[in-house]
Length: 183
Image (cartoon, rainbow, N blue to C red; front, side, top):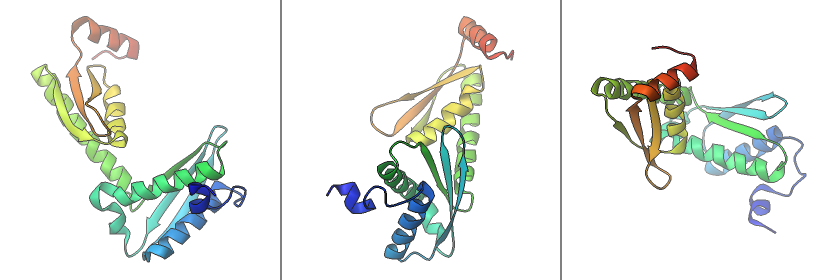
């Protein structure tokens, strides 16, 4: 018996990613003695199934402590369980509590906006502290909307800094023309 089978049970045991997620969440919450409940909303498209899981209850603050580490852990755990049982399906899992993810993303966007302005005003590169991939993605996507700056991850390992730098001269003209924007 393999590790995933031991942890998540045998394949074919669940009818859907939602039923699997309900069982795994309920079992984990009970074993950890959390005073928490959850709702699962499912949406489907031709390409993927999206499971949005909202945690709520007396101990929801525990899930958002330390930059949402427990939310991330539950999300990863569920994703692995679903991949084990439904390897041919593309299922996107998002675990949140009390709008934490949206607030965290908005804070990242505000920080990126400040650093973008600084890079443009000074005409040189600025750096953002080392961040995990999910946070870097939010910042890169936000900055990609502005043809005046570029960004890239710098460093080794999981946590990398972000370099934000203005696009100069000819490169900027090419970018604004290809984006269809003139600034």
